[in-house]
Amino acid sequence: MAIKPASPWTRRIARAAIAAAVLVLLAGPLIKYGLLGWQAGLAMFALGAAFAGIGGIISLIAVLRRRGGLLTVVAAAAGIAGLAVPVGIVINAGDKPPIHDITTDTANPPQFVAITAAVRGPDSNPVSYDPAIAAQQQKAYPKLKPLVIARSPAAAFELATSAAMQQGWVIVAKDPAAGRIEATDTVPWWGFKDDVVIRLTPQGAGTRIDVRSKSRVGKGDLGVNAKRIGDYLARIADA
Image 1 (tube, rainbow, N blue to C red):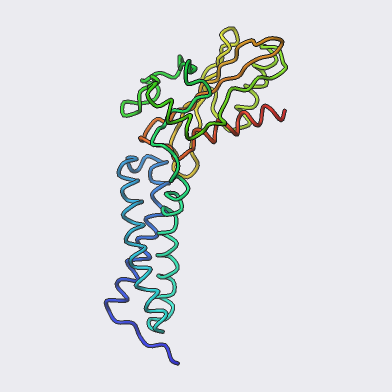
Image 2 (image 1 turned 180 degrees about the horizontal axis):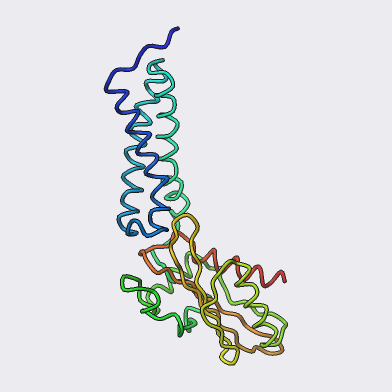
């Protein structure tokens, strides 16, 4: 069965689907390098995915009807892929609460000192902790607990600092006397910056390590902060 030419409208839709898929790919870098504000970038990401998905489905129908040739095949693949990215994110975050401040100690969370509101920026979430979110965190991440290691506070401080650097975080401040480390992590692709404060306190013959990770922007974090803390503490535990 021969492939028939696509209609002018199908060709336009196919080109639009490819263009929309490109916008989905560009959203992250445009935010990361400051060419778009994060709200505008996320809006472009969502709208691009929606248009890519619609155009991709229409192009797929044309492909199944053996119309349009290579253009519709590319548009179908690109459009559906462009839609799959945010759908995957939504599915993965479906059980995550809409919070952006996660800590191993919800009763007495580590406090930011060097990382102030001025450092975080004028449109960032406040550095203060809202105790109303503690119940949501405990329900969503019941296994997120402080880590106690059999090392002196001084040895634990060096280990905690080294582990933070190995995570790729930028150390903003270190206070061995207070047992506090503050750092910033950048989310790959998007370029969003999240801030971390680590608190070390003597406990018996060892040291207790508490961590707090807070997003600068957005209401929810899609589970990123909890995963960051879990990965960090696992690195220390394995050291």
